[in-house]
Each structure stands twice: as structure tokens, then as C-alpha cells.
Amino acid sequence: MDNQALKKVSNEVRKGIVKAVHAAKSGHPGGSLSAADIYTFLYFEEMNIDPKDPLNENRDRFVLSKGHTAPGYYSVMANRGYFPVEELETLRHTGSRLQGHPSMHYLPGIDMSSGSLGQGISVAVGMAKGAKLQNKDFRVYTLLGDGECEEGEVWEAAMFAGAKKLDNLVVIVDNNNLQIDGTIVDVNDPYPLDKKFEAFNFHVINIDGHNFDQIRAAFAEARETKGMPTAIIAKTTKGKGVSFMENQVSWHGVAPNDEQFATAMEELERTGETL
Image (cartoon, rainbow, N blue to C red; front, side, top):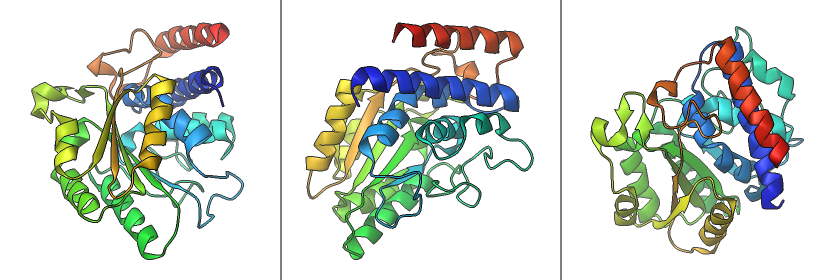
């Protein structure tokens, strides 16, 4: 898929995020929108997956460690064909398969229930080690928040991954520089993220998380890296694609009202028309 096609898909993913959170009247749009391009590349280009066979034992695995950005995860899955796009508007409703955080018990295609920050990467590391023990070729991808990297469990998992040379593991950090209470620097500065992962024996790549050329090159480089896991530090914009949400910490976990929803969808429709 070329970059233009990927941009079109990621714009549809962003529409799905806004629709889902608006319909739920709750959720986390900011970090879902910032990761939309990463989600899109993983599910439409990078990973060996098949929506018609979601439990194939040789599939690549994805763990959403920052589980609160489930709206983005669900939207890319729906656009990839795991379930109808219309179902996105059941987000967080009673009886819906689309719970506020991903649950592997409800929706085929989710490899791990997640949401308690720090635990997702730990599970992903275990999956990668399990693949090595079983001589399986599948790869494991996990998406973290930059604020999540303030959790000690992240670094315990990273220590193990580096020590065990898990070159089938790719950790992606959605580095949008904002978390629920403010900038990550003001809350509990985890920088420099790249040097920290390097200290835990990771191969580290810094990219613009909205540039598909850089995203493609980073994942290709990760595949070529042997003997150590890869960490991709993706610099992103929280709320990307909706002007009044961009770089606004207030949109971490707030749903748009009807007027804001209409404005956001109009912007995304205009964006789609230019692609």
C-alpha cells in the first residue's frame, strides 16, 4: 500500500475514533488520534494477520499497552475487516464487544486484554520469549504511551527483553508529550526515552510518527535488526487530525459534544477529500 492509500485509511481510522467516542460520551480521543498512523501502518502494511483467521497460531501479535486508547485500536480493526465499522458506535455500551479497554474475551483479533499501564509490554515480552522457545517465526508489536514509560514495570520488561535478545519484539512509544495531568516533563520526566531503551540493550529508532516514509523505514530496520529488540520512539501530536484537539491535554479523556463532533467530522471529511 502506498503512502497516499495509507493516509486515506488513517483518516478513516480517525473518523471512527471520533464517532466512537462521541457515541459513547466518554473515552480517550487524544492518544487514539496521535497513534492513528502507527495503527494504520501496523494493520495494513506491517503485520502478518488475517481478519478471517484471527487465531492463527503463526500470526503476528499486537498488544496495546496503553489500553485506554482502545478507540483507535477498534477503529483500525474495523477498517481492516475484523468487524463492521458501524459497530464502533457501540463503544462502552452495555453488552458491547467494544469495552473501554481491550478485552480478548469479547472480540476476536485482540491478542491481550490491557489497560493497567505497564502490563501490556510485559505480556508482549512474554509472547516474544514464548515464540523463541517454540521456534516460531511470528513477531510481536506493542504500543506504549510516553506517560506510561513512567511505570517501573515497563523497565523491568525492557530489561528482560534486552537480556534475552528478543529481536522478534518491537516496542513503539507514542511520544505525544502529554498525559492526563499535563506534559510528561511536568508530571514525571521520562526523557531521554531513546537513551533509556538503549541502556536496556534495545536498538532504538527515532521517527516522526505521522510520516509514513519514516514509519515504513523504521519497521524495515527493525526486521533487519538481529540479536536485540527494537524500540521505535514516534514523535506525534496528541489529537492529530482535529485542529481543536491537537496538543490540548484536555482532550486526553473527554468526548466531544454534538457541536464539537460536527466540527471534527467536517474537518476530517475535508481532509479526506484532499487525499
